[in-house]
Image 1 (cartoon, rainbow, N blue to C red):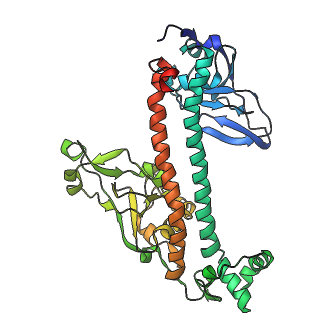
Image 2 (cartoon, helix red, strand yellow):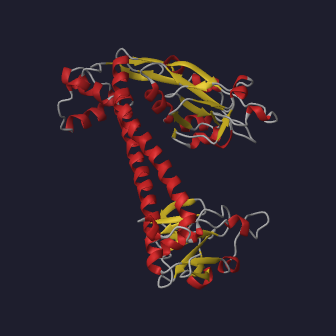
Image 3 (cartoon, rainbow, N blue to C red):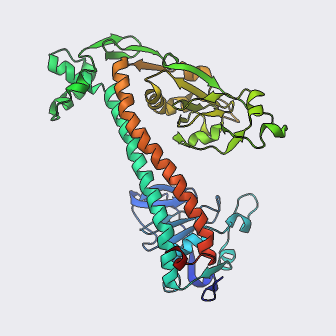
Length: 420
């Protein structure tokens, strides 16, 4: 530690306060935090200045920096920070290095106490250096957050385009109106909305869609010439994977083959996995390769019914169902199934562990558009997903850089002057 750094007790630089019950609060714009993050938004705040939120019970390493009015529930401590002594954002980053789980004083439920936290030691450089360190690390986090928000927008764009073309059938309605064809009653309100929209010339899009509807017993009115079928009709193959035997080291040691578990299907787009298996593990198990562009659905456990898109070839365990698309349907299949998550979750069975099965997934009924309209959707989504995936990779790089710098900057091993 540098000679101009000092060691202080956490209780010397901040005051720890208890969160309060939120149940009687009305909805509002102020974030209400629990140990797992923002729970809801309420009308009142507990505090309106910078603060660090530290779990009192539950997931003890989930700490948060807040620089806006907030409310916290009683599973979290919030803090009043002496900003004349310590820069709040710097202190947050220093506390990110603390393993709060090791300070657990609870039995059945992991817990922290005020005395335990007050006694923590923190290393403090001069205030100007604290601000500079926080700026460097904060800039990385700000860019990560900006990319995350951009990805939310990109996902919303893909979902909105799919809904417009393949759920609301806006181009078909527009064509029917232009041709003077009958509009089914179920689309009457949408047709009135479409009439009121000032439209630019989208003849290149309109030409991809029919100008009439036809009735089906199963799905009601659908665009003329489109069909209703199982999603399996849009796939080259649908498969589940397997797990190499854990007691055979050669199946796992020095593995180079990405191996996806159902818990990792929480990611919207799979860009990385925690585990890898060896060629021997692959050939001696039911694990199978999935191609880039496949869609996966988790079948067992807490993530049962969750859907993700595969960016790079990988293998999976038996709790993951993989759908390898036919040409022209990789993004269509993903968005279709991502809209069916609630449907899958509602059909999950089992008491100890929720699960769905491969047959349930592959028999999902869908309205299949003409190939020309699905091809156009793929072209639009190619641009959207490429940017989305680029942002994910950039965030991985930024997070690695931040996590590398964090301990070095917080210990004084790397001084700000060395980074300039």
